[in-house]
Image 1 (cartoon, rainbow, N blue to C red):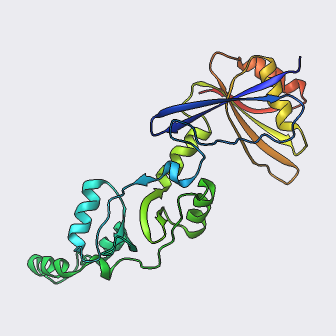
Image 2 (image 1 turned 60 degrees about the horizontal axis):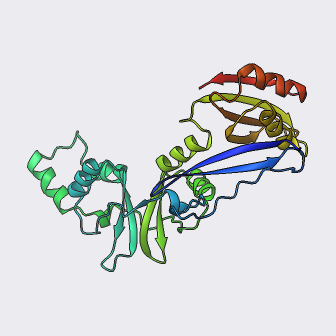
Image 3 (image 1 turned 90 degrees about the vertical axis):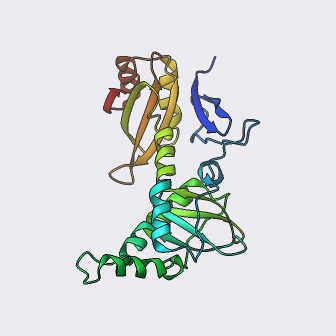
Length: 261
């Protein structure tokens, strides 16, 4: 019987966790492809719609700066989409925009004059109108790339010109934790491997041979184009550190790091 690697993806949905186990033939594939499709528990296809915050807190262009700041502090958010009369997205205002609009502590104005001027200042005067957005079916990695390339921490999610949600760096950090199995107890090992066909299949097959149950597998660039770095998380109680090291050594691979987490 051909050895097969067992991969389990745990997918949060609106109605709880959905687990999918994927059996992979040990030496019959060159690349592992994870394909998560909607399920009867709400779906999980790693698109923006699965991780965004629906019905985000918003303000109108006529909202005063002090009121917008109060809303941010009360709701514990750092950005507010700005909606027009028809509910269309017309801008976004950040906490720093509102703080920069406030008078400097060195101002010669007295407290009453400052409050008067701030009360007359509206979001429309300090918001950004050229808003970078994504739609609901944007892949998460594309949303992350847009944020990184533009050095921004959040993206309004739109359907046409209507706001349907917002996705932020915090949402992506949570996804990153899940992808690395950070909340699962187990053994985490890191390997530097040559860029060769069938390498992932060989590694997962060897782990399966010693009883290991893989909960996450991630690949990263190596120091040059000829190598890559692979991090694997194996479920607690399914394989020991010694078994995993010996399994990798039989493949001619050196374990760069191994630890229980």
